[in-house]
Length: 254
Image 1 (cartoon, rainbow, N blue to C red):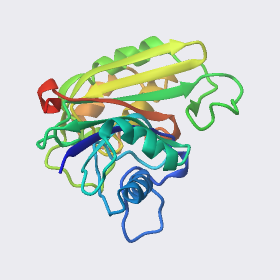
Image 2 (image 1 turned 45 degrees about the vertical axis):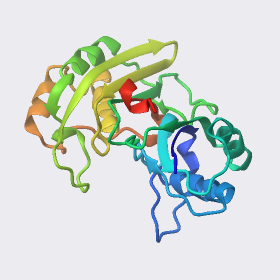
Image 3 (image 1 turned 180 degrees about the horizontal axis):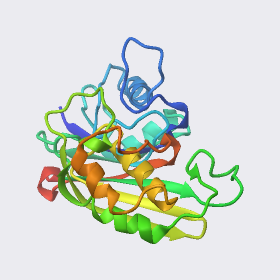
C-alpha cells in the first residue's frame, strides 16, 4: 500500500476543529475528509493530520497522510476526485506518494501560523469570519518589540491553555513578524511546533501590547513566569490560519 500525502485548505468556521472526535456529534474537518475519502475508496480510510487546529481556525496548508488501501485513483488525480465530493469549504490542493516513513505530524520541520487583525473603524461583513476586528489604534512598533522577546528556544508554558498533556512545553520559535497592510495587521509565527492555543495566546498578548495595555518589556517577564494566567488571553479563533507546514526534502523522496 502506498503512503499518500495530501495538502488541504479549509474554512474552519463550521467545524469543531480539525481532529476527529469519535463518539460525538461534532462535525470536524478530519471527519468529513475521511468520510469522502472512504467513499471514493469504497473502504474505510483513516488519515493522520499534521496539526490539530481549533474550532473556527482556518488552514491554507494543512497536511494529512494515509495508507491508500483499496483506493485505485492515481495520486495525481486524487485532488480532482476529492474536490468533486468534498464540501466547498474544504479543498484538496495537492496529492503525492510519500515514502513509507513519512508522517504528516512527526516528520514536520516547521509550522507557520498567521493571525489576522482587521483594524478598521467599522466592522467588515466580508472579513468577519477571517479576522479579529479591533477598531482602536494599535502600536505596530511596540508589538514588534514585544515579539522579539518570544523568539528562540524557550519554555512557552505561559502561552498555552491547560488541559492537554505534553512531554515538554519547550518550543523553538524561529521567527515572528508583525506587519500592516492598510487596515489589516498580520502576525506571522514560525516554529518547530505549537502548544495548545499557543498561537492564539501569543496573538492575544501582542494585541494587548498594541493597545498599550502591556509594555513590550513585560513580555519577557510573562514568558519567564511560566504562568498561563499572565499570557494571553487567547485571541478569537476566526483570525487564525495554519499557513504552511515544512518538511525536510529527504522525507518526501520515494
